[in-house]
Image (tube, rainbow, N blue to C red; front, side, top):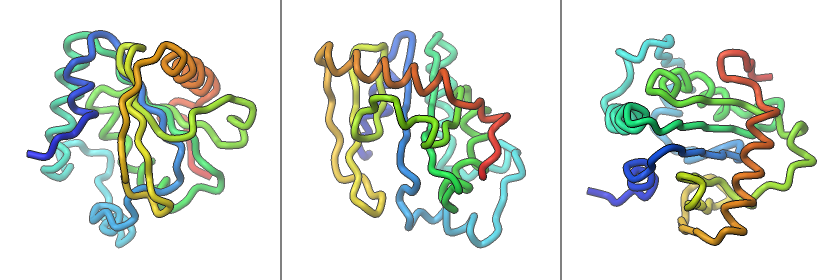
Amino acid sequence: MVKYPVREGLAKAQHSAVHLEMRDIYTPDDPEFARWRGGHRYHDNPARLPEWWAPWRDLVAEATARGVVIRRARIVSEPVTDYIRFEHHFTFANVAAGELVRWLPRRDAADIALPGTDLWMFDESSVLFTFFSGSGEVVDREWRTEPAVTQLVSSAFEAVWERATPHEEYKPV
């Protein structure tokens, strides 16, 4: 089984997990993205989701059942890329699993001091930075626990969350 540090962080989280996404494209060779581009839609029906989604759904459900609040914020360029349209279409599954999701147009984040890459933060005490290639492939991850880092991430995330639009209200431009 492939070690996946986000799963480990969520499994250990006691009260909170936040995910900040700031790229306009991820894993462009993703087969699900290719299917979506070919016209496949799930029609907001969690029962129709592919089997590969079940482990994430179950992990989120288990974490939220024990009181962990999972928030995901996405900073996006507008007009959005096809990949962001795909993510927006699929986000109903994140919400159905128990995540809270918000979207923030990049222009509305211009005056927020943001970390240089996407991240997860667990219980406001550990941060998992994810580093990507220019094309959107994950190339490395790094755990950080220094108070200055966790404070920066917490402040940035809360500023984004405050300004962002809940998933149910956000319409990609």
